[in-house]
Amino acid sequence: MTSQHSKASVAAISIFASGGMAAAKFAVGIAIGSLALISEALHSSIDLVATIITWAVVRVSDKPADHEHHYGHGKLESISALGVTALLYVLAGGILVEAYSRLREGTPPLTISAVPFVVLVIDIAVNLWRARALHRAARETRSQALAADALHFASDVMGSFAVIVGLILAALGFWWGDAAAAAAVAVMIAALGLRMAGSTVQTLVDRAPEGAQETATAAIRGVPGVIDVERLRVRMVGATTFIDTIAKVPRTYPIDRVEDIKRNAQAAVDKVFGDADLTFTAAPVARDNETVRDRIMVIARNSGLAVHHVTVHDLGAKLIVGIDLEVDAEMQLDAAHEIANMLERNIQEEFGADVEVDVHIEPLEPELPFGVDAAPERVHTIAAALTEYAARGEIHDIHNVRVRNTDAGEVVNFHCRAAPSMSVTRVHEHVDAIERALRRAFPSVKRVISHAEPPRA
Image (cartoon, rainbow, N blue to C red; front, side, top):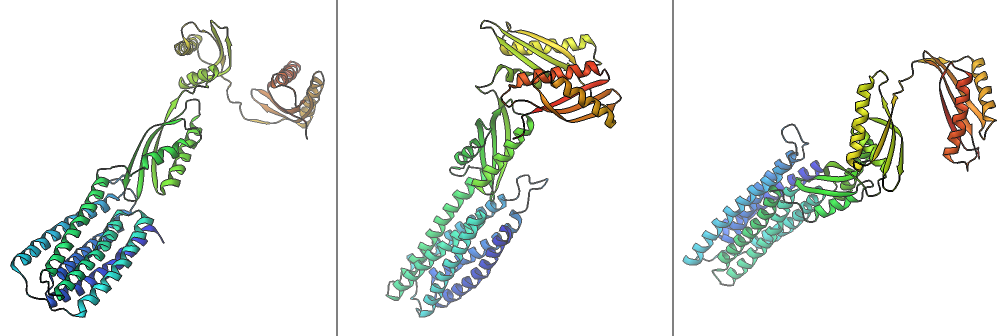
């Protein structure tokens, strides 16, 4: 059963219960002339109106956001609760005026019988059941309207007890007992309205729920990749917790990894709040453990430049940086040189004017054109040559050799093996020697792509 259906069902049942009990108390109150019982009947009538409003509101408040209501329709519950509060104050004022009039002028004795006591006991039992059902539904669905309704019926129990006390006093000959009980009912109604108004107004002015900011901040800080939470705001709209945060993330992270952090943050707040809507703004910041190479790569990425082979030499008094910068192969030298100068200036702004920067300009490798697999004989010839060149060094087991013909020339891919303890630098040197030898022997080879791996276990 959906939360909306649950809320609507509980509210609908309460309508029939409120109507039946209000009619019974009003009829008995008129019959015996009890202001307290009539006041309690009027209170139940207000509850009936409130329940009808609640039933209508919860059918709308759970509708999703639309182009006119970007935060959904949950605030309708708060507005309905505020309207019911106003009705309670009107009722409490009328009862107090009538009770004061009777206390001042006196009242005729009541016609006491067992009937009003039976009605009130049944009313107490019904209200206890309704209050419990509504409170449980309000807690499960986080509905402010249902919570207000539950509070109504809980207060009705106290009101019914006050009426019973007043009737007992009247039966014992204390003529003022019924009017005093009516005044007590009015005071309880006013106190209930004050409590409801305070809670409702706090929601309407977007006061953050108690402890929500600390809970949300802790949940987001616990997400891997989040360095800190710079700002976080929380507001409630109906049952949904809206969270707006600015979180610090490493500036070296790529966009897709930042998106993963956002998704994990949403899952984290959903776990603690149930129904949460998170607006996550990532603020990239530098970490204390960033290397010089990391900082240079950030500068290049922010400038939209493709760089590789970044070398850094720290001479103590001076920092020397070397970079390979890739630009369009058809770009004119003066334009490429201006891009290189811009990169140098950006690096000097980051590290200081005394840093020495050398930028090597390279043509950006174009995408290789469409190709077809070479003939088996050609693949065999290339594979044999690769095996021969590998035997001169520490590379062995040339396998998975593929040769493809393209308009730009031949493209060769191969796998090979090396000792697992060999360093990456050493493996690269040996493989690079094989690639150079192959291109010297076969000028038609445009590119060689190798993959080194350890021996099979």
